[in-house]
Image 1 (cartoon, rainbow, N blue to C red):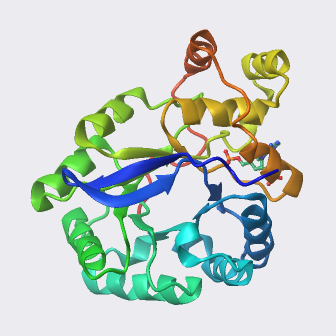
Image 2 (image 1 turned 90 degrees about the horizontal axis):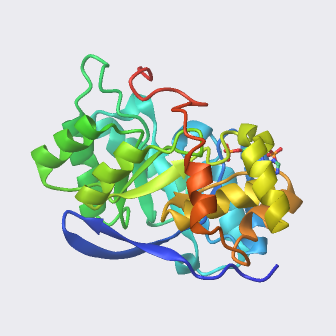
Length: 284
Ligand code: A2P
């Protein structure tokens, strides 16, 4: 496979363009160990992935960093995201944890840094304090863009009302069983880019008959159909796999298109089904 075609979305903070663009297709690394992350990310970069998504919580930033260093790619060629871990929501902790991420990844600046979970029900946690620390990181040049993950509309409203700084992205669980229609509309109104985590429903969607049927019709795999659906909805999508051939196939999604009726048929699979935690239930 040749390098992926450029398909990127501009990020904004508040109402101003940040000048940062995020490649629409990236490689996720959730549940991939540090050693394995080094191999998988190296293979991904070799295959043409130019967007890598990690998190402090995954414990694999150092492995990702080793793969980036060994790739020989220029820093600006790869978009790198990490996320603030739950115990570090207080300002001082957040700043310290961010420095540890930079060190582990071996990067002077991250492209995107996210608050991983809102923890809005945890006593003593103040979303605004955390978001202000993120703004400090942005203004200090440690990250080119900042955003959030697993935020509900009320959480977005709270931090924006308090600071005036709109998160560049909100990364949430999103796939054909959980199409997040309402949240996507909120994002659109606010200028927040939607990123899909577990875009394949942790692989469980791959046997879904409608998707299997569409895949047969189009001569591609169910995973490719799903990834294409995310892309055509304008979502940033980060499928993950530990297998080289699947990594290659998941990125080989620019040679076919879903028509309007196929998109609608996939949208209709929505049943509000989460494969991961509900944002309100993740607490310290
Ligand atoms: P594996 O790592 O063994 O390839 P999600 O990104 O929604 O969390 O889904 C990831 C899961 O889907 C992983 O278990 C991964 O398994 C599996 N997976 C990813 N891509 C493919 C593919 N093209 N075909 C089959 N399974 C896949």
